[in-house]
Image 1: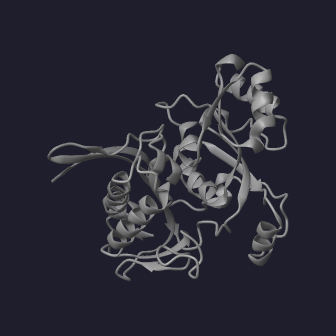
Image 2: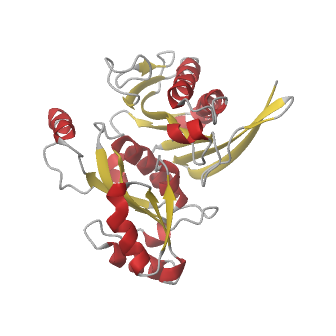
Image 3: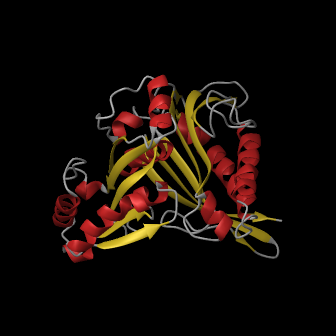
Length: 319
């Protein structure tokens, strides 16, 4: 994915930001209206339209679903004008759909890209995860007890256990994890849905989150892994299908071993990975969309592995 003008990511960066921006603006118009599906559809439509104005050829490897389940942004769909470069695309047109519907924080529009074959083709299921920033990446262990991981991360971050903040989805399945974290004095930050922003928050100085732990979506794992490659943090995960339907889905996709532990470099391979996100409702990664009388303000983050950069972009869209 190289060109004479530098990496293809650099050449496409502002184009991808525009994609997440228009999707975020479209979704933000539905904040608090109680209709997550309408918000998601608005983001999908805006994102797909903007993608198809870009001079590249992208194949969606993680999207809204299989072709027969989703009319737009489906897995295998080809986007762009059909010109080089050829890239893998992982998208979440609206992460935290319920947050938008209910006016809660943490919603994003997200894109990750890499050279063809670089992004893991994740079947839609669940994964057990733990994510931390660069200073603690070498001490986490997905097989270790919750308390052990918290203590090791605290030591790596030069913090007391009582200062550690563990982020986890507010789900009944995490009741044991939450109890173990609190039992040793750590603090727990619960959030309603979507764990990409919280995973990344562990690697950003602007966030107070130290560890992400728990079970979440496999698509979000790949998106977070791409960002962790750029930030220097780490995400460990392994399959955790919730029922027989999910087991069959994974088996049909060729996944039969649920014990394999994946690192971020397994899910997002190579040296030309990018991650782009725009805030819809404010969270640890980006502020949300702001509407004023004559302009719309968006806040985005753009990351790459080559060169390894993180850019925060504030854009005013004049009416």
